[in-house]
Image (cartoon, rainbow, N blue to C red; front, side):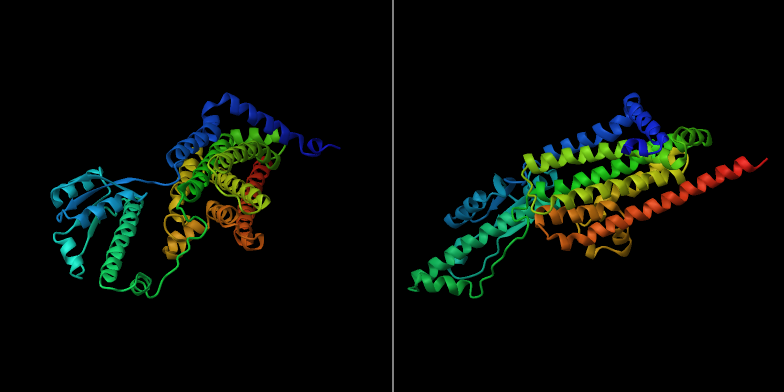
Amino acid sequence: MTPRRALHPGFWLVFWRELGWLRRRPFLLVLTTASPLGLMALLTAVFSAGLATRLPIAVLDLDGSELSRTVIRTVDATPDVAVSQRVSDLGEGRALILSGRIHGLLLLPANLERDVTAGRRPEVVFFYNTQRLTAGNLALRGVSNAVPNVAAGIRISLRTAQGQPSEVAQPDLTPIPVQTHALFNPTLNYVHFLLAALLPSVLQVVVVTAAAYSVGLDVETPHRLHSLRRLGGGLWPAVAGKTLPYTLLFLMVLGLSDTVLFGVLGMPLRGDRGLLLLAALLFILACQFLGTLLALVLRPMGSAVSIATLLTAPAFGFMGIGFPRIGMSAFAHGWGAILPGTWFLTARIDQTIRGTPPALSARPLLILLAIAVGLAALLALRLESLRAERVLHEATP
C-alpha cells in the first residue's frame, strides 16, 4: 500500500482542492508567496550593503590650526563617517542634524593646538542624534576611534621631544592595555545581524495570518464547516489536507530566502544544517497551528485575522534583537517567549553565526517543539469539541 493510499481519501480531496484555490484566489496566492517574497526582496535590497559607511557629519573648527586640520583629516579617513560640511556656528550645525542632512557635528574648540602643546586637556565635543540610534552610534564610533588616535600620537611626540625614548613613551600612555575581541559578527554586518532576523519575523506574521485566513474561509459559518467536514470525510483529515499545501509553500519561501542569504549575501552557516531545517519546520508548523486555532475559535474569519496580526506584528520588538530579552519587562519577556519566532531565531543564530554545538542548541529546539505540540493539542481539543457539537446537533430531534 502506497503512503498516499494509506491516508484518508478525504485528505487528498481537500489537499488538491486547496491547491486549486491558490490558482483561483489571487489574494491568497499573493498573501502566501508574492507578499513574503516581495518583502524579503525589499529588505534584502535595503540591507544588502551589510554595513553603513561614510555617514555624513559636519565640523565646527574654532581653532583653525594644523592640529585641528589633522583631526578633521583623520576623522574623514575613518570608514564610518565622512566630513561633508563645515559650519560657522552651533545653530547651523543643530539645524543640519534636525533636518537629517548630517548625523553629527564635531566641535573643535579654540586654542586646541596651544592647549595640547602646553599639556592641558582641551575637550573635543561631538553632537549626534540619539533618536537615530544606529546611525548615531556608528558616527560616534568613527569619531571616538579617530580623535584618541590623534591625541595619542601628539602625546608620544611631546614625550619624545623631551628626550623620552618612544619604546618607553608608548607603554606609559597605556599602562594597562585592553584587548577587545568582537565575537560572531565583528564587522557589525547588518546582513548577519538584522536582515537574518527580519526575514523570520516577516514570515511569522505571514504564516499565522495566512493560516487564519485560509482556514477561516472554510469554517466561519456552520454551513462551510459542514461542507469542509463532508469533503474531507471528517474534520481531522480535512484540516490536515487544508494546511499541508501552505506548509510546503512556506518551506519553499524560507528556503529561497536562505539561499539568497547564504549563497548570495555570504551569511555564514557554521552549524548543523539538519538542526536548522528541523527548527524551520517546527517554526512553520507552530505558526500554522496558531493561525488555524484562531480561525476555529474566533469566527468570523476577520476576527481571527485581526488577532493574528495583533499577536505577531509587534513580535520583532520582543525577540531580543534590538533590545536584549534579559532586560525586558515581564510582559515583554512573556510575549516573546510564547511566540515561535523567538526560539526559531535563537536556534537560527546558534547554527549560523555562532556555530553553536548541537547539544547547546537543544533548548530552543525543545521549546519550539513544546509550542508546536501545545498548539496542536489545543487544536485537537477544538476539533473534538466541534465534532461533539455536530454529533449532538444531529442527535437532537
